[in-house]
Image (cartoon, rainbow, N blue to C red; front, side, top):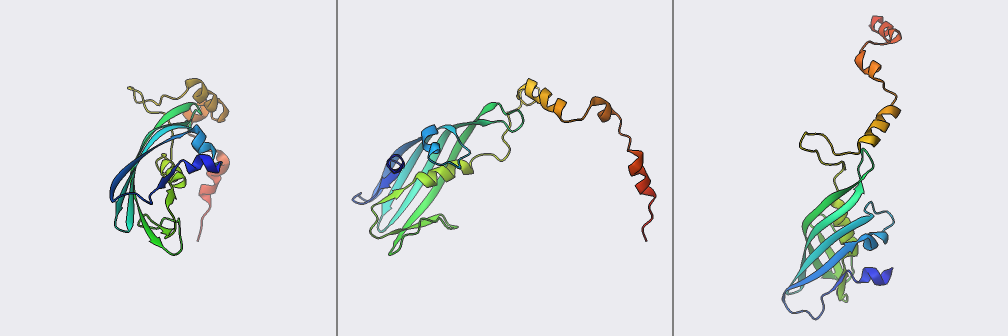
Length: 182
C-alpha cells in the first residue's frame, strides 16, 4: 500500500528554481487504498505544477477526468465529470504539519525532501462531487433515470393514484381544527 501511494509524491530537494510539471493518474486502484472513499471507479488525470522560489514552494494542481457512481434516484451507474484547480502553498519549519489551514498552506520539516500528494488528491476529488448525484435531463426535461426502477420505487412508496387525486383530510385530523387554544 505504502509503495503505491508513494508514487503520488513530489520530490522537491535538488530542483532548480522555476516551474516543474508532474503528471499523475487516479484510477480505481488509487481510491481502493482509501476504504472510506465514495469514489470506487474513476479515471482522473492530475497535473501538478511545482513552483520553486527561494525557500518556498507552490503546487498548482489541475484535475480533469470522470468518476462513475450510482444515481441517487435509480441506482444506475452514471458518469460524473471531475474538473478542479487549486493552489497549495508549502512552507518549512522545524516541525512538520500536513494539515492544510484556511489559506491552503501546509508546513513541512526542514529535513523533508518530498511531499506526498495522495491525501490531497483524494480530498480534491471528493470536494468536486456534487451533493445530489442524479442523471442529467434529456431534451424533454425529464431525468434519464432507469424507468423500470423509478416505476418500482413508486409502487413501493405506498402512495396510490387514488390517494394522490383525493386531497381530502382524514376526519380524525379534521376534529383537531375545532380545538380552541387560549
